[in-house]
Length: 172
Image (cartoon, rainbow, N blue to C red; front, side, top):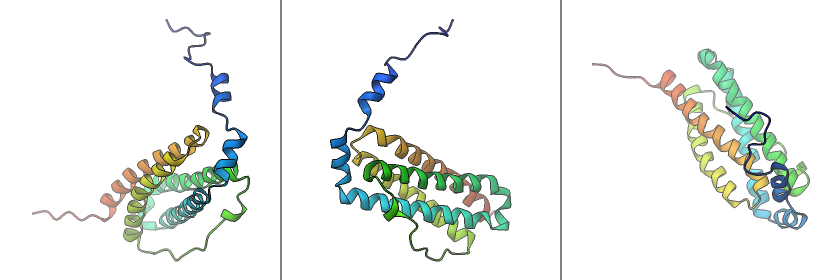
């Protein structure tokens, strides 16, 4: 029988939380890293562009059947943007310099846009993995784990949607 009213955790969660909290000197060290700041700005810009692309695909009537999948990916993009802002705020104390970038034109061709998103999501997995490994603080890892997992799921879903809507199989 499962021991219901007992602490079954191997570690005391309160002690563990105190151990992994960022120390002021560690925060100062990270906040002085300009390359990290540039990477976070780049990640925010990418998250913003990706969310815009998913929103554009949502407006395509040919993909109405996939609306729930595309909407979930769009909302994930907004969540990634929020997570990246939180990481930036945790490290640098503000997010004002990292707001909305200049927005280039998005192609109207759904097949080309979906292919661009698919390839972009695959590249982003590697980008966020490298960014995760560059983080010395465990407190910041959860945001990147969540983003990487979402990007992997998006890759699988986009691959399915691209094959479903835009791949023509020639039969004999």
